[in-house]
Length: 193
Image 1 (cartoon, rainbow, N blue to C red):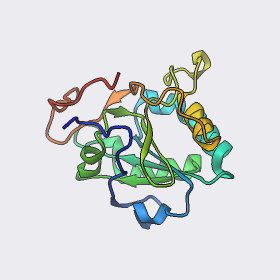
Image 2 (image 1 turned 30 degrees about the vertical axis):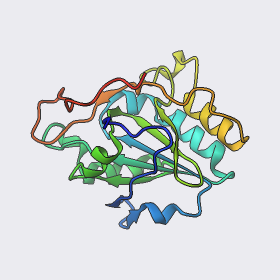
Image 3 (image 1 turned 180 degrees about the vertical axis):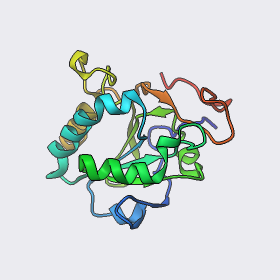
Image 4 (image 1 turned 90 degrees about the horizontal axis):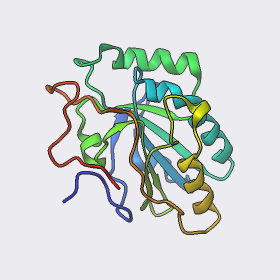
């Protein structure tokens, strides 16, 4: 059993509180033709550096039925600014075009095998994984990026083509796990490619 979901596997369900005051599960997104689940947070420079590119990608594909769900599983004991109140404030400030959910128990992050922030998972209509990894190749400084793997995967999927690069390594800070050192990774976590 590998740590991170494999291509072709089904999206694990979740039931998590969001910054809009509601609780969401996988089935709340049944109407979406494509679902992008990504693990993110409030503080990571790789998240902050690429949020606007992620926004542009989400907005580009929204009319084609692509929904985005951001999940923050980071331990607030490690990074207090990853708490729920800061999530709410961040969404109020930036008005990102996705639901922003809190995975305080980290069970959802474990079910998906989240490695870093950000880490993207693209699921087709049947909620089978067709792409996982990075959004772009330089998330900390998107002025230097040369490829948007997330955009490519969504373009290929919606065009009915094979995903040109279904697997990349996420680039960012590691997920901050409860009761662990800030740089700790689960023993079975490894590079995807």
